[in-house]
Image 1 (cartoon, rainbow, N blue to C red):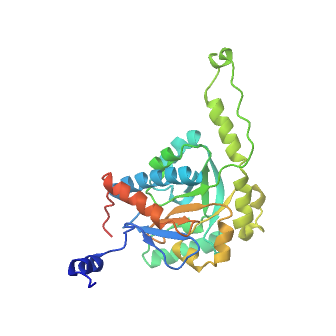
Image 2: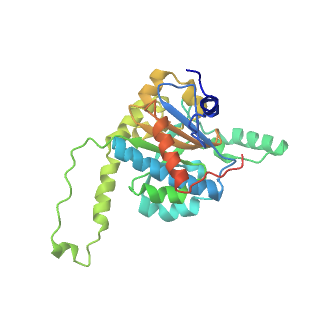
Image 3: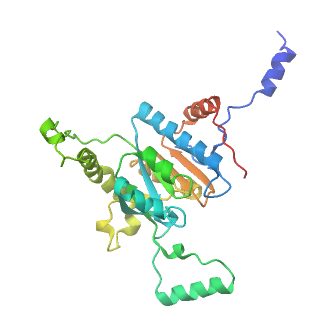
Length: 300
């Protein structure tokens, strides 16, 4: 039976489902790597609103489908000029602790001696370049022990310095705090923050912290500060991801099942999932956001 012109036209007009505004990287087939570009950091209001909604929905989806939990971090170099005041204000609530990060395949930053710093600064002055002292700073990152990841994203996402992990459920057998008698909870000296403090103490002892040093700590093992570092994480870029071998990426995924970062080198948000076939799930999330009126607006 000959094919009808209308059916042929429909086939020719068919377009593959769009992951827009994300683009999937073709160079890694063992995992899912996506990039969403922005014009600059800090992002504009439209982009920030969209990213906040997307990250909330993604976290909920991964929690419901894979029971993954989210952990947020903020790179120290991005506190200035916009975030330092807010970071200090929120520190008592979020309780940040400092660890180290590094782009895979690179060496840790070593602070130069004062004479070398002066020479490099003079070169910038002579070349009429703006002086960037952060290039001499180690790549510290702050882990928030407080579990309120949504509030942390609302405060710090969009400025170019956030990253996050999606981790497997805590495997420890943790006994909940006993229910306190009313005579204690009604006493003026009682503070409900006791329960939150208990949760943060457990977070500080979470096994993934030590595991992160096993997976990513090799470049720092000769450092005097290695033993005192609570965690070491990768600063993933599209280049470091695609230049790594499948075995190296497999080793990374022993620590986390998902990873995202506001990547200044890539000029956008980088999203990495352990599952190599995440496209359909991402597409469903994006389609539902469009139906709900969330449109990514950017001027690249």
